[in-house]
Length: 280
Image (cartoon, rainbow, N blue to C red; front, top):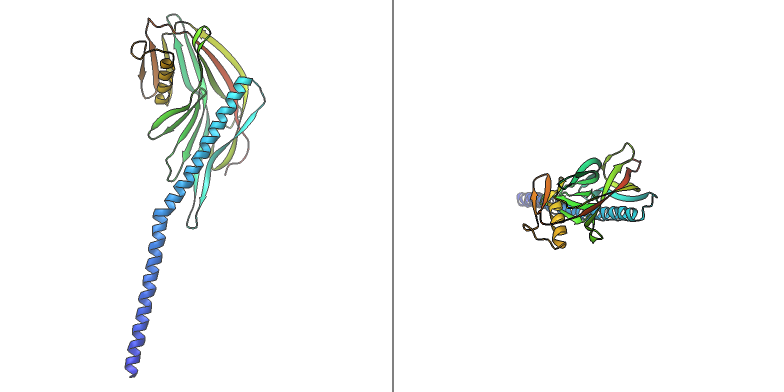
């Protein structure tokens, strides 16, 4: 009888150990599943929301510069830029970083006719994300246009200023030249930072009977679409009135000799400064 009780006790002990091991394995499996499946989804969702904040910030930045260009008011305007975020969950804490640059002489556009050539070398603003799961994106303010660049390609989400059939000119462009002010021209980290802009001056040039427009850029697809739409909006036909050649770093518009296009260009200098302070 005593032996039978011992056997029953041993069986109960073994059963308890097995149950404990099964529960422990279930907990580990659940934690691994959460860590490898759900946490990445949560972090990706948070990073997606953060990238929407960046998009809104650059839309506000372009709006501020457009208003300063129109009003020519030299009062500085500060625009907050979200560099990155710290993503929290009960299992992990990760950070998504962002980098911001003020790039001098980063973009060139050249207009030519039979007798003269005008080249405009402009500064730009560039933002680049460093996400853990969400697709990385770049936002670039180039010549007044807002470009979105990612692995699939680049597009002009907001065009540079242009007026068609303006007085004596078929096209009147207004291009923004970002001129850095101060020693700090780049910043990286996470959190919210400020970019200060203010209007400086405007210079203007006119060219009649333009033969070609050459753009040196890191985002040729965006400029190809913009220039193609510009000429087609004027009523010109591709291959008949103009052609466009695209390379990895340039876009060239060749205008047919029988097509007469007069262009005016305003170059607006915008002083830009990364506000002093610490970045996390």
